Length: 308
Image 1 (cartoon, rainbow, N blue to C red):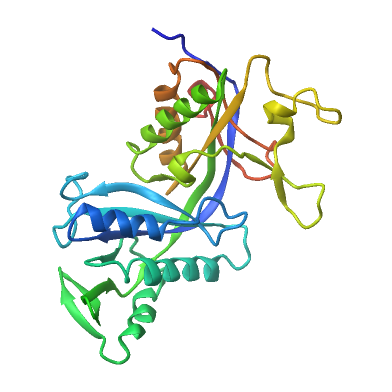
Image 2: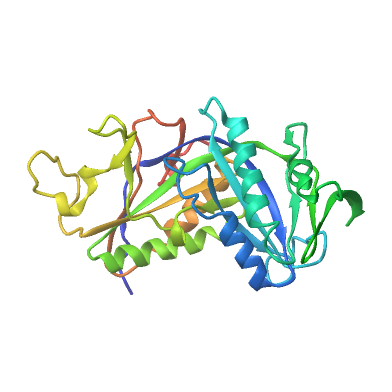
């Protein structure tokens, strides 16, 4: 049995977001997967993406069947996040959600879209996408709710009228320090898979894993994020770099966890650590933070350090 990796006494520094939650359904898992992959594509990081997006979980037939989809078909819950510190956060989130649903879900055969956040804060995304019907769109009572029906060459598309938004959390993270690249990747893969069992959370990078953790700022004035040189194993010993990479570490992989609230992200963090700790060749588990300069939501890796 493999020894457990050391878990550093540190914290992941998360920050507040606003987000939408959307249920996509389709005739079968094949077309559902196509819709999800397209809808959450190019959304790893808001550094250069319009939002951060990912799959929360599959629901209905073939997924979490405790969550019944309105139309009884296979479904997937996806989240779209933008940082709350953006001055244009409302416009940015509405635009990202609308464009991704319009261009990647409306266009995908057999799909439908349902809102999962009810409340006074919402965007009229369904109405705006319905204009694609060119005057033939109609409001219809379907599945116990009023939805926009849009005729298409493939048949028709149904979408809820309004999509609510609320506060969320971005930037939960874990670092996996491996003796080899393979060990770091395997640990991160195990961790990312474990987060899928934590409802209300997403991982945003390809396969849930990021090989290029970044720091805030750069020597280039036109960049506001750049490679974390102090934690790049292959820069250890390079002049001008104060390396923090421990001896024996050849690779560091990261997962980023966003979610509907701090509690959900904390649960996902604990499950990720437990799943990865016994990975052969994994030396340490740590996290990235900026001493409170980025966010005020701290997720301590040791549960004993958490208040309450």
